[in-house]
Image 1: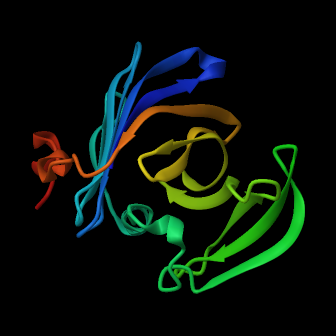
Image 2: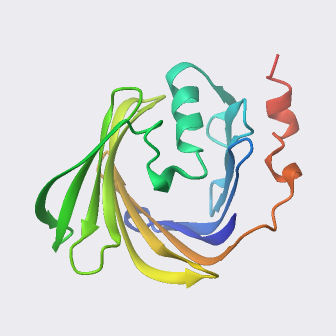
Length: 198
């Protein structure tokens, strides 16, 4: 999968182009963002190693819980909520999420952590999610609101995702999504990361 779009942080007036690559067999992911005034930021998982490169931190390998969670989140088919990954999936209640009537669904992950999905009662499409992740800054909870669904080939997916973490809102807007066009070389870690891999 290859998607292009923009990432913006409205409160800071920051925005820039974004590219997302994903693949399976093994699961891999790469996210590249160019932020005006900051530079290029990359995060990747090549099937074994998780890493990030940014002007603020330089090249870094993810280890421990961060590596485990990056591998978990790189699952190409995670939207299918496979019982091997999510042993317990349960609809909890009908509630309001982002001003819309939604079904709240509990997702118990294989690592014991609980995430939540919200599905729009009117359309059946996912309205958003609340996820807990371990990061370099500690345990963080992220709320995502999804919308502006469009069809790319045979698949319908959200083209806007607004995420809130630690009071900061960032918005991802996708313009293009295509499948079966990504080369395996896209997931190669950059030289600065290869130098850190023992």
